[in-house]
Length: 158
Length: 325
Image (cartoon, rainbow over all chains, first blue to last red; front, top):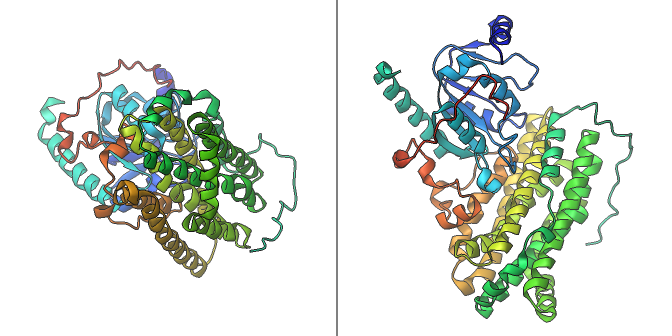
């Protein structure tokens, strides 16, 4: 995306500005959304429709995204997430990735999380299946708390 | 049981793929088409030598497991997916079910490709005779079939999702087990393709079930939820017997049961419900899990500390115009 296009996008999305430390995408199946509801933390959802304006992050955040069963890397990251990450400010503020998926998709399990982690040079912090079990919810809630504490202690490195 | 004649869709309109009511229909259609495969693409004959290293008991078990899977795929292709068509909410959903039905027939046929590659006609005929006579196998097919012919569209979807996402796994365990021991690895590759397809099927039918719940009364929703868990228990008890019957001879029944619990939870999640089995009984053998998905191991859990050895991928230079994945 060109700088001009990005600026134009910023102008349009005043209402899409978010300071949530967790930003996520969930398709109409709502699996990932259910996980976030169980997590009970401040979170912002990337709009379902690609044509809608995407979010603009104001604070560092962790991105949570699902992978659907695909055979190749191409198409693994949902278009809505690509649109979100096409905004340089969003890429600058991403600190980690959490992947949702299904082990039945073999070596593409949580592939979208791998791709984003690689592209943005951040950790793929955790993976869970479908809407996650209660253990997944506990581990991610505690893990995120610890993660943000550690990051705030290291702010000078940023 | 004398099944009634299956109902057909009462009214058919020309399907317009340029006017979409539910994006999920297009997404799943495309996913299924991209995932399309045929057994002829898998070099099964490379497993002939490996097959010869199995003991007669192990060969017999493998034949029986695969005829059991053949029965489920046949049921789902010939009755299950087709029975969902009359209740489809959108015309595109009808088309997705025809795709699922055909693919189930491909799956059923692919087991015959494995058989003809590895076994004699006599062994094959005996395994098919076993599948007709095995009480637990017949029972699970009959339970599901009963609801396919029944008159509740949502119960049909529940039964269908539990078949796709739970009932196959007592069988899928075995090729994953062989694969983890470097045996029948080409057969395992073929089974992984089936597992991938069934995952999309279970996800989609479960999703449509949840769409069907929208707008229903709280009482009806509660009734269907209770019914789902009852059916799951009924099927689970039968699966446990089936598992002991098959796997006791090789001492794997307890390991298989963990895999059943793990997949029962995922089947319930596909229907929008919480997992039922606690983590204490879903700790699937890591070798089986890694045969299923090489990325599923604990080294990828950064939060738990075991991910301390996690090696981050080398950053890819990101340009603003580089986000065309």
